[in-house]
Image 1 (cartoon, rainbow, N blue to C red):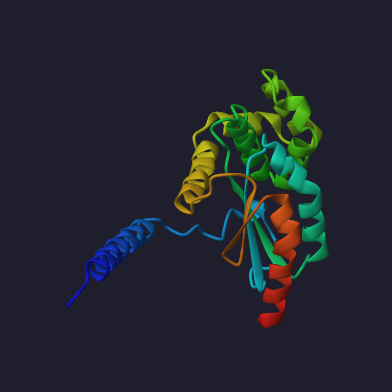
Image 2 (image 1 turned 90 degrees about the horizontal axis):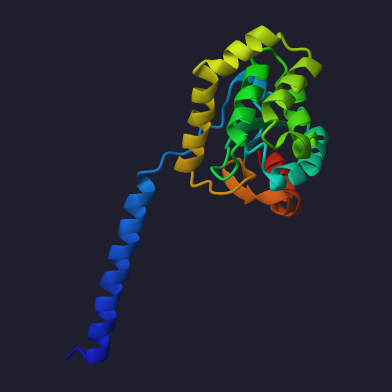
Length: 208
């Protein structure tokens, strides 16, 4: 004969199973991110054993803080890993989207990485109401064709590329920046990248 306790446990088990099934269905609605981007936002060989994908925001202080160790990591593993940059401007950062579009348009002239570095290195300078004049000044400094760059910024294509990355990040449950995926495993922030991400890279390089 089933006791009151056993009936309660059976009921609890059924409830838990239904909850887990609901979560599984919900997770199934989300698409995985794509470990690819336009060539100008990718470093490293296409057949690399390890792919590092970063979702980042040019106005994010934590992203700027992560830049020095990230640059060291990219230099240390150059030629052995593939690095992919994804735009993920946060809603709280009002100048992040214009900066992302500006960098995207710089990339279409082959200058994404110099522009990317300038945005992070000078983050305190351009994150204010005068951002547009600073973004234009950076474009001039890296040697862009300014009329073409301005036309790109004014068009819909760059903004659409940024939004496509944001949608991928949302689908992958990215909710803070910088978020890194190393062969699919998530690492958030500079500390996780340097403390755990490097171990993941080494493990993946040895295992494959």
